Image 1: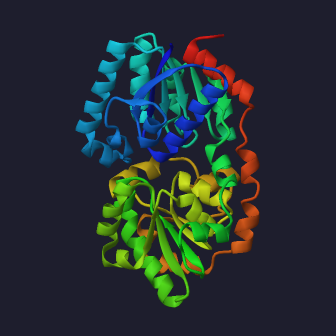
Image 2: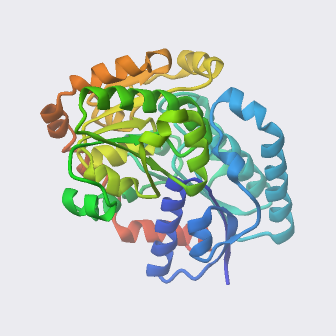
Image 3: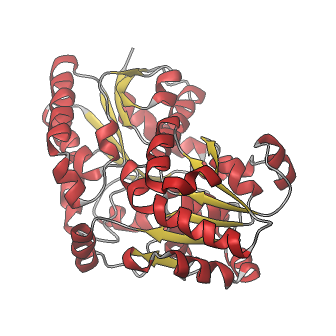
Length: 372
């Protein structure tokens, strides 16, 4: 049986990994899966060989602080590839790390499928040469990316975004409230991110802004969605005493968004989930100051929120770094153009439909099984 090594640790990466596992099974692609994966993929039958939590760090300074852990993980993966020689590797996101893994795989003659293109449309466009040398095929999520890769001679498929199915299956507002055991009344949802580093920077200002909002609007409930159980303690530590006044749900962001009237959301995949559910929102983005200063000089796109990038307009307000004060957040919440946002978000679903299942299955056979 063919063997594929998979790297997918964070929630969004795991969702893509699970989708690809199901596509393989539907296409009759029999595969033994091993890798560095999160709990959901382990439950789906992928044997985990190492702890990949360190891949959750983001930002230049944060990566430097965790360099030892990242180097140790890379050595574990390198040793595994050299010893086991799987037929293929499937790498999801984390370009700085995974392109090094791809280089090692290609050196060993292992086929490489990369999922979620490095953001060369935003910065470091010269990286396209590395990608061409190190991978056999790339699966993308956003239609504007494909021409960049195809012009460089890199075979590219467009995946239907996994959030399409997830949000289409979301419960209605009243059912969602019942599922979460929430009382009647409007809800302000907080989505502070799935990484500890995001919680460290956003938990306190989100909690403070939510408290200010509730003081002005006593009938509103404040509820935070935490991506994983182990984030409860970091959330409570950073939110401080206010955490006791905020209801928590864990692993149920879709249900909370379905129930909410307004949302404060960390920049990332959650902004797209929020948008596909048509929820009015403000996007918050905070990094280590030095990392932000460097990124500001390098990044070439006018927006940071995925819905804004896809729609090529600032539908969701974006607050960055020092702009994230409780007072400013509440001001933006007060003046949200809710009807305009809801209307502007409607085209998003059509932009994320992707290629047909047969084309994707053929690409999986090429890269995972070596079948032309």
